[in-house]
Length: 298
Length: 305
Image 1 (cartoon, each protein chain N blue to C red):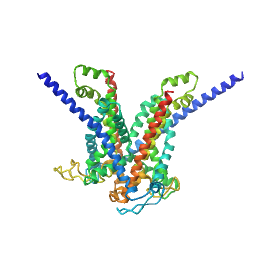
Image 2 (cartoon, one colour):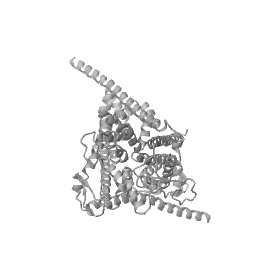
Image 3 (tube, each protein chain N blue to C red):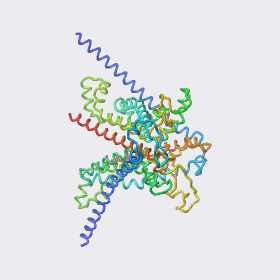
Image 4 (cartoon, each protein chain N blue to C red):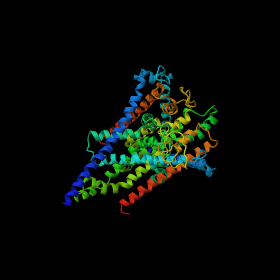
């Protein structure tokens, strides 16, 4: 009899605690959704509320050149990191035998992926600037940044190849194809959408990188759009010129407020970066959604 | 005849690509090793070329390296090391309870909302560049703290901890929610079948089973906070002294490297001392990696019984 009452009370208490905690979690989650939305809208509002086209101009009073540099740098970095990362990924998925070398390679990839970007920046500064005797330049920046996104591309490639059905490979070998023919004609085409997702995410990370670039790509940009000589230090397409990106501009704007509307330009840079990242995330999402539908035969 | 020619060509091609692919793998190893070797080669200079003791570097607060190759300055980096530790742990303290609560919400309480709204929102916030977080801190948080506490400037440990906390919140939330999601559904069903409420199931079954994954999330969050340079440098005040309170400015390892490396003479004592700090960051990174392996190995052992 007594036992029954105690149990009833305990049950009541457990139920009350449960309802309380449920409400508590809804409140916390609500607060955070609100906070994230506020930050998101604030960045866009601060960037665009008194937007005028001259702010995007391709000269010193606009951030057009920085926007160009940012995209150019991402492309240069991917030109290096995509092939090397994919080769390393293919090696791990198809060629490597379990053993010492594979363990070391995995440790290396893990180390690279968690290196602080300022450390990568210092390494890039020493190797690509000091040791080559060059001035700060976009190519050095691109190489430094590609160190940061190599691990991501390598591990996505490996995952993409490993999740393919074993039948693909067996079918190809059964027809007498060599290993390379199997990889090139069968496995890679099937794995490309997933690898693309990784490359896009890597590009998204590169967009906003600044610490690895401040001592490699340089904190200034001087472009003459009329230049036709690609070896000229003011030609926009010359990779051996200093190239400030949007993220570096924001970093510079905190102290070096040389320009009257430096703060406004930094706000705009932040808003543009946010939009670019949104676009990259959405396209990665769309590709992986397509991938799921495709694999289910829809 | 043509068939065998074709076959010979295929075999040759197969071999060539095999070597190319091996090169890709080898290149990753060479790259990592060269980063490590250059850091060691430069960073150890403080202790070999300029004859400072490791004890002085880690525990002395007297920081006055010479900007020449003559040396003879002081390289006590305790202030910066303390600055890094204190900002990171405050950031973790601010961020962790909320990360846990939001992760529980999106996996256990309302998976539908979690998947539709929170997951994509958190992904976007993971991708926001750290300078943008720093810029928000500089333009909103720093003036806000100045106003609120009537301080001469708003640059402070508090501002740095809040910026870092905001920055690691999405990272930790997504890793912790992955960990909670990977707890088998049968655990929850068994708990409900015993008459447990949802909160009892979460607090006594799910959190316990996901312990090692949650720890991994915490370590990765800490690692990100430790390595972050510019966002912190924008709000910490860069004053080379211990903070006297949460509201006083100080500096940390990464801010110091970011602000002073550009001006230091290459190969000089100052330059090399900054490299030693970078080497220290590298060792801390390795330590975090080791910790993650240790934690997940222990987690695996527990799961197997």
